[in-house]
Image (cartoon, rainbow, N blue to C red):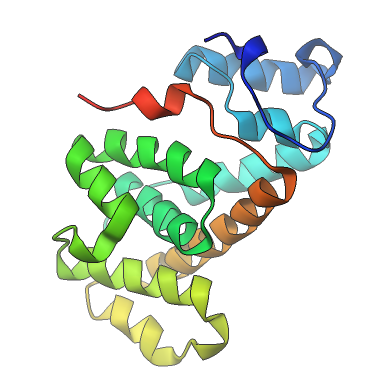
Amino acid sequence: MSDESTDIGSWFPVPAEHELPEDTQKMFAKVRDNLGFVPNVFRSYSYRPDRLRTWFAHFKSLHVPTDNLSTADREMIAVVVSMANGCLYCLVAHGAALREALGDPVLGDRITLDWRRAGLDARRSAVCRYAEKLTRSPVEMTEDDLESLRRVGMTDEECWDVAEVAAMYNFTNRMAMATNMLPNEEYHALARS
């Protein structure tokens, strides 16, 4: 399916790519070269190009892996938050990214749909539990929630990253749902074999 015919679903105006600022067009070209398509999150957010740039810079900074928080772990947080929020776009898009990062499509789908029954180790279970609690009942967070991450070997910087990645996906989920963003069809087939 070509980018131009993809159903974005946005309730807000989505500018044509050639109408966007030059740096945004270059961003689209780069992501198209990497993925083969432009994710609808970029297209939807291009309604406000300055905000797209800021959001994407933040997104990239939060996805730099560390010793105890890999790329797969960060995508795992994305799907746990997205399942708790019921965000279709992020479940599909980050479910695909998780399958790819793990190199295991079955485990990726199991985590996306029900992390509790995915057979995760203690560290990943602690990360999922923390991200889900921060999403569903943030007012109930206590220092013991932070300690649960430290107990499985995470540094304070990595604990901060878990919290910040979860918080960023809560924002992104809400924007996806506020705009009616639909996942690109291409995501459904990615990293399946």
